[in-house]
Length: 214
Image (cartoon, rainbow, N blue to C red; front, top):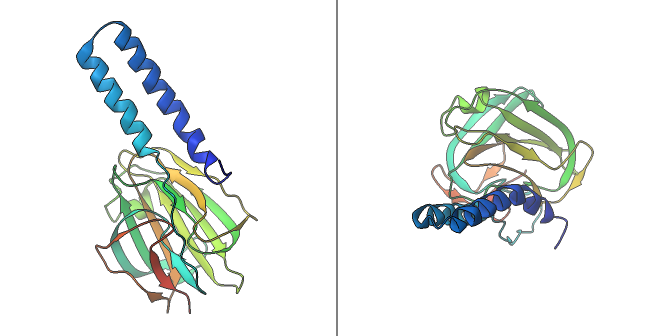
């Protein structure tokens, strides 16, 4: 198992072990219906923490999706934390059935990380981007372009996990964290980025091309 995959296993184990042990205990009491329910819960836990391999596209300036989900917002906004400038914002909503592993949009170096405590509004609401608990990451490409990607907690998602730290060199499509049980990921790109997606489109983390840096 590669180092890239192992963090996902560690995140999954406490939930999977707990559900499996509880299922075994209930099964020993011969409570058939409850055993079936707990067995289904254990399988759902395993499914939620799945980490499928992805084919990472190659090409200069490509930005890949940081998450699986549906694009619910595309707009020009002011990014005030890191860029302090106008940027193109792409918001991706992840439902309970999407893969929740987050991936690096492009190769570069992590220049900053900002955690913000906050509310747990439904992640598909506009206010979630500003008021919810979140973790923002600033990345600088080898050519000096800066982009920001943000893990946003949701109504059910109460745990943001980030495996990168400031100063890390990262590769496009690499795993950098996850958000448990439904969430949102925001991506801020420079104005002039050639976008390759549309509002409402389903994307896959690490493999769907969001845009091309100019």
